Length: 115
Image (tube, rainbow, N blue to C red):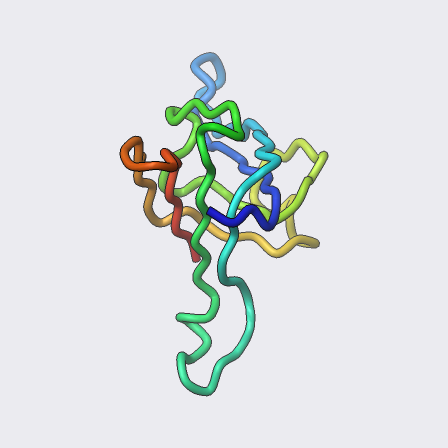
């Protein structure tokens, strides 16, 4: 697997005391990132905006329970605690649409897709 980037992930959960949404920030140093925003005459805007991310277990400390559909992905390191997604308006953000825990093969990893 080619390592070409790093990632900040904002995991959304519900605070048990306040019953409000909270975002916990996780940083993954060595990941594979493919896709992003752009326009393609062949694929159309929607397909080009998809991202695929692979986080290898052997290069990152991963707790799969902190990665869910609906969480927020930001390419690169973001040192910002947020209360809502709107706090990331100055960044290129993607919402996780699928998570697969690929623990088999030569390179076990978490496979994430987002839009």
